[in-house]
Amino acid sequence: MHYPCSGVILAGGLSTRLGGRNKALLDIGGKTILDRLLSLFEGLFEEIILVANDPENYLDQDFVITADLLDVRSSLTGIHAGLFTATRPHAFFAACDAPFVKREVIEAILDRIEPGIDVVIPETETGIEPLCAVYSKNCLIPAERNLRRENFQIRRMFKKLRVRTVSPKVLTSRDPELISFFNINTPEDLDKARRIL
Image 1 (cartoon, rainbow, N blue to C red):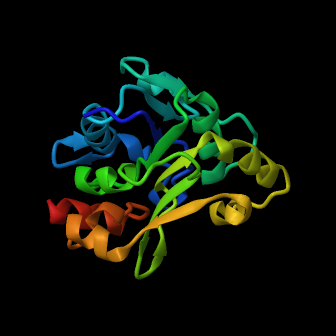
Image 2 (image 1 turned 45 degrees about the horizontal axis):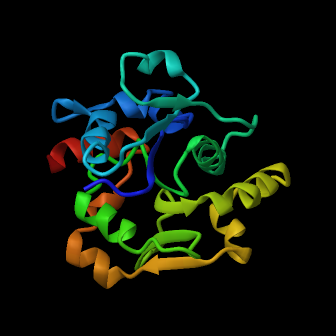
């Protein structure tokens, strides 16, 4: 099923704790993280967008590629670029350091999109997950305003937006171990991901 929503993969991080390695192209069990996300997205979204500041690495792929529009390094910058590029009223975002995002979790988030809701975001016992969430086009101006003010925390733009959370109960019913929110930031994380597989 395709949702009336764009799918955006964020691949623009500096990856300093991994020695600058491109997380999107890390091999986990014979597939890159990017390929893992694409296999999910292709069944869900008609429009797939990659936000990357090294587009030359992805020219053989069949999706829209965009880069950060503002010269600020933050996840919010990637969300801003993805929303600017998206042609749908909402966009689902995933980070390319999350190799185990489950389709069931994405669907639980997408099922909660409705007119008047600007953000649909998972909330676990440890807090919200802003890089596995849906943002509407209404978030574009608040995101740009906060970036220009150097307010880089994603949740800071929520004050004047209509936010719906996806509860821990719903999330664990779809993903009991919440592995969808496992991120690779360090060499130790990479080793753990390979052990998980």
